[in-house]
Every structure is written in structure tokens, then in C-alpha cells.
Image (cartoon, rainbow, N blue to C red):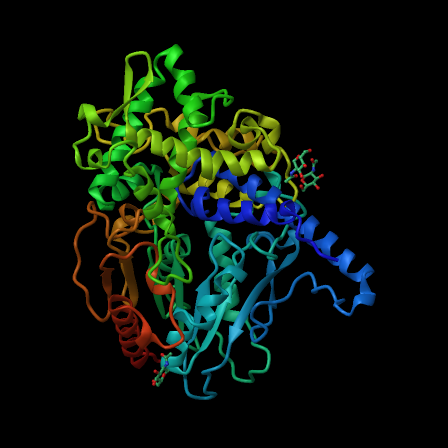
Length: 561
Ligand SMILES: *[C@@H]1O[C@H](CO)[C@@H](O)[C@H](O)[C@H]1NC(C)=O
Ligand SMILES: *[C@@H]1O[C@H](CO)[C@@H](O)[C@H](O)[C@H]1NC(C)=O
Ligand SMILES: *[C@@H]1O[C@H](CO)[C@@H](O)[C@H](O)[C@H]1NC(C)=O
């Protein structure tokens, strides 16, 4: 049976398009559009799964031709060397009557030398399935540090993510145990009580030195663990640790605007001001939305929010081409492609030779046309190919879209955390005269509306009108510091303004006891990724890895059980 009809692979292609072009990282700035993209991706995956199921049943029926094979098991572990394990945790650390759940973790004992006094290096899974972190156990930072110390490596899944789910659904009430205090208490309980399978030695804290590593949100958690549980956490490494929680995260785009190729930033600034201006005129509004293939989208803020999509690709850059995306650079390059005579690309924005007519005497820079074409091809087309309307894909005003609380709706988790404790809402700069690459229609009201739509008040819990970011910032904010707490950030990480490397933070010395390091040209937690042989890594990554090995070894010499 041949399955080569052109449509057979369509969902796969669409998935690839969505992944590479329109879906900014899950941990990007918080915009209602993310949920839509999550749904679009889920729809494409479901279609793909249906196609595969159909394909394998067809293959099985056709078992006489010699090509039949067993269908793949539904869930093949990618890292059979690290089978999943489970640790029993109370649902509520302050009230045992709510019972327990199983928190998942994975262990790397490749380099473990029994009786050597080696550490446990634990990597906090943060706001995603712990499975997504297994590469860091295999060739990334955990492998690197355990190899260097003879220690045991662990990836610990965060409560509510992956399979570490303590509740039957994600209703407002059932999400009430998804908070910083409960998650920190999980880690402390795990560190002081875990018994690793196949290891006789007692490796619990504080008898054994534990080094707590995290990147991004988990990086903030690593720093928090060092402050909250100094007796259990011997050392901690906060990579791109967002220890500064904030309501408006407008500076995220500021980093990109300043670090991107200046020609690209100029195109973006001009395109966004043009769009904002045109949207003010009822006649032109429809024309400009149609240009982007989005005339059927009812609300203007939804429209400009789609234009924010390609910027998220900045965060998906990585020094390792096997992991990173080139989508941001591709997007920039497409903006500057001259429409018409080749020489116009070199002319300054605003030069009349660069202008093309939109309607009557209304002219726009050719790069706006390129921007529109990018959106039509990389956002609108994948949407239409899934037989959904643009309103279904990009509209955010239908409240019923957000009421499903089943465990399949993973987007409800991080969204709940930002609505209650973390913020980071994606808005335009508060100063209307500040240069910007996102529309001024991206207001706080728009960015936070999912908090009101998705979480109606429950019996036991109500999502506050604004997240209580003080619960994060009281733990140290930009100034968070402790002996054996390392702060590692990326020079052009859009999250840098929320880390101790923010320009608002006091400068500090980089010392062995309190390492404070900025990776040149680094984006988001670049040190978390690694190659099998770190000597094959680019110089700035190899350097940070050798420095990390050095300070962790030095710390361990101070350990007294
Ligand atoms: C979309 O609808 C058309 C016509 O009904 C159908 O042929 C096509 O397979 C559908 N595409 C997907 C991805 O469902
Ligand atoms: C919620 O979504 C799941 C998965 O798509 C679906 O199976 C379920 O029927 C939905 N529940 C409701 C109440 O709509
Ligand atoms: C593992 O450690 C050994 C001994 O320190 C070292 O020679 C080797 O390069 C390390 N491997 C990696 C991948 O870091």
C-alpha cells in the first residue's frame, strides 16, 4: 500500500511550518496569541496522528506483500538509558489530607563513583515536560558536571507538567497548588528523602552535596532554592534565571530591537508604525489587514498580535544548529528583499523610490509588503490548510475557546503561573514616543485578558486582578546573591532585563564563590546545551563550560557533611 497522495503529509508539513516560523518559544513573552498557536499545533498533531494511525492500519491489512511491519509502540522513550522514576509528593505541603501524587524524575549514573563523595547535580525541569530536558542529562550541563565530579545527575519534573500531575483537571481550583512555594517544597522534600534505585549509598541532602541547576524560570527557581533551603542546597546555578518578576515585559523586545541587524530593526520599526497609522483610518484598516491575509480577523489587537509572532524566533536561536532555529534571520532577510529595482534596497527608508502604492495616494515602504507576505505564508497559510478560519486561528475574543479544563490543555499551566505570580505580559513600551517593533495596540489589558477568560473564580481559589509579583521579588530580585550561587546569563538574551544582569541591577564581581558570568553573544541559557565532547563546542560555550566545571569543583572542596 503506497501512501504518497500529496495530502498525506500535509499535517507534517504544516507542523514544520508552525514550528519553524510562527510559534515563538513557549517561554517567550506572554500573549493570548500563544494559546491559539498551541491549539493550531495541537490540531496539526492530531491530524498527523490520525494519518499515521490510518497508515499503519493500512500497512497491517496489506501484510501479504512482505513489507508489513509491527506498528511502532505509541510512546518509544528517546533515552532508554534513563528510565523514568517516581517520587511520592504531597499535593499540598501544608495539608496532608489532600493526598499525594507521583513526581517524575530521571537519573544519569554514568559517571557515578560510589563512595567518592561526588555530588548530586539536579536539573529543575521548569515549566515543561521533564522529557524535554533529557538532552541536558545526556550531553548537556548535567552530563558535563557529573563527568567532571563523579556525581549522579538528575532531571526533576516540575509539579503539574509532563506526567507529574496532582489533580484530575486544570480548573481554577485544581490549579491552586501550582505555585512557587509548593514547587520549592517538592524539591526540598525530594532532595532530603529520595532513594535512587540501584544505589545503596545515602545520597540525600545535606549528607551529600547537591548542586541545583535551572535555566530561565527554572533558573530563578535554582536561585530561590539556594535562598529558601540553604541547608539542603549546597550550590546552585541560575542560568538566564528570571529573578525579577515584572508586569509589563516590554523590554524583551527592546533587547531584540537593539541586538538585531540595524537594517532589520529599521524595517520592523517602520512597518509597525505604518501599520499602527493605517489602522486609525477605517478605509485603510481593511486594506492593510487584507494585505497580511487577515481581513477576516475582527479585532485589531489580534491582528497586530499576529505580527508579533516572528519576533519570538529570536529566543529560539541556539549556538548548536541541531537545536536552534534560523527563522529570525530568515525573516529579516525576507524583509529586505527589494520589490522592484534591485538598487532600492540600499536607499534609506522613506526614499520615494522605495515606496509602493497601497491605495490611492497612500504609499508604503516595500519592506511592509515583504512583512505581509511572510505573515501570509507562515501564519495564515498553515491556518487555512488546517481548514480553520483566521478568526478561529488568531481571534482571542471567544471566551468558550478557553473553558476546556481537561489535562490535554497544557497551556493552562504556565499561563496560570504568569497570571498569579510571575507576570511578564507582552506589551508595547509604556512611553508612546519610545521606538518600538511591536504595535501600540498591545496594551496590558489585551496581554492579560486570558487571565480573566481562562480562569473563572473557583470555590477555593480566585486568580487575582494582577499577579502578586512580590512573592518572586521578595526573594532577592536583581540583587539575589549567596555564596555558591552562580549567575550565568546571555548578552543578547531577551530575558536579560529580568535577570541580575539587567542594566538596572548593581554590577558585581565575578568570583569563585559567587560566579557572575555573561556569555558573549549568548541568547537563552546557552550553557545548558552541550556536545558529547565539549572541546567541539564554539569557543565561548566551551569556555563557560570549563569555568563551570572549575567553580563547581572548587565549591565541592569546601563541603563538610
Ligand atoms: C480540508 O478540507 C478539504 C475539503 O473538504 C479536504 O480535502 C482536505 O483534506 C482538508 N484538509 C485537512 C488538513 O483536513
Ligand atoms: C476538552 O478537550 C479534549 C481534548 O481535545 C476533548 O476530548 C474534550 O471533549 C474537551 N472537553 C470539553 C468539555 O469540551
Ligand atoms: C570527562 O572527564 C574526563 C576526565 O576529567 C575528561 O578527560 C573528558 O574530556 C570529559 N568528557 C567530557 C565530555 O567533558
